[in-house]
Length: 337
View (tube, rainbow, N blue to C red):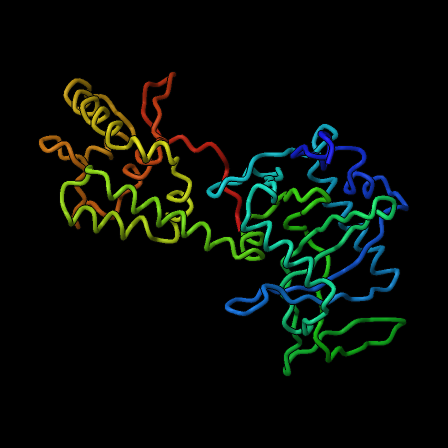
């Protein structure tokens, strides 16, 4: 792979499959697959290739082209690095699969399943459009999280066709909609919607594992007042809503947490004594500091409002240059599910 192809934003290169597709190149053909991920079984994926009529293929081309163009700003896609916690709106977050063994292995297993056609249609959870560059024998995959739409026994769907009303008694496959993520010809993953990506690769397990590792490492530091404080912290940190934040705490920060914490405690004590004006989120943080013992104290009385404490441990409390008020610094807008 040459230097240009190795770029994490190769999707913006005029020779990439996505750009050739957007330029209506006849070199790019479409294949369509249904998929599901399996758990606790010998194989990871089941897949089924569907043959599509020309008008359906044309519809897929048009809707995918429209969606891709909606994400282009100033002539190119906005690319950001993938972050377990947040996603930048209207941006594609990327991961080089070859730098992530877990994802790389699952993608290879997914590709292997494409030739097996072992999936039953009713079990489909994902769809994939495979864009094939006939001139290079390379492929790019566009994924959608869309399961089968079932017709209920007490409800039927109807279509008007040539003035005839037709009842549909079969399960329907919904196609179209906005894509969730792309894997290009160089095994670079571009994520538009993080949750479907996580479902497709069972990546939530990765986040939870990292969260638990970080909780364990933090509890090994001598920064909590007593066993009750440690217990209440672990309970809160293990909650689903905290998982992403806990998983992304910098490893070097945790390594030096005790040193940094002891230094900040002294500064916090001075702030509490010297400043009477509004300190913003620091005021909330005071509730969790035992200044006499210089430890974090969590009790049943203050455990419900622990945001300030978690922002401290994530290194997200900053001082506003303009107002001198302390607040949480959130670098990204969180992408909705």
